[in-house]
Length: 155
Image 1 (cartoon, helix red, strand yellow):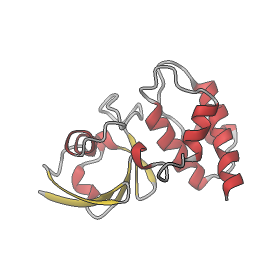
Image 2: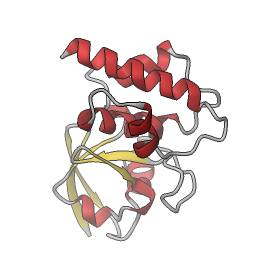
Image 3: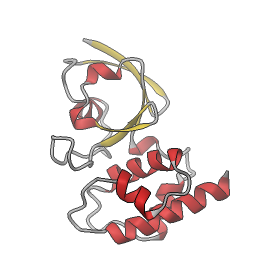
Image 4: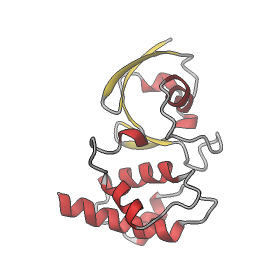
């Protein structure tokens, strides 16, 4: 089936089985490798993207549901050469260890900050439920608070 949607602000049209997880369309057909495969069960969050601004686990989101939607991957989070506040905070706080899960965490965090501009630790615990096997949670929490500061200073 032909599926048309926007990816990172650009129109896109693909021919794919509508039930194919959007993750594989993004990685294999669009060659955007920042979105990672983790568990394939929507549990770990490594594949988190934005669909119309909402954080979505792309491994369990059928491509047919992308029709007419705005999709943002980690590659589209920044505005040209200007880093997104979440990306800047991740660098400042030296968050990644292995880094594999970090794109998903950053996408989940960016979506959270759109809804909750000054998240508390409880807000973070309730909304950022991705899994990091390296356990960089302490640094991520610091980076989430720092990203909120950067975002609010730029507003």
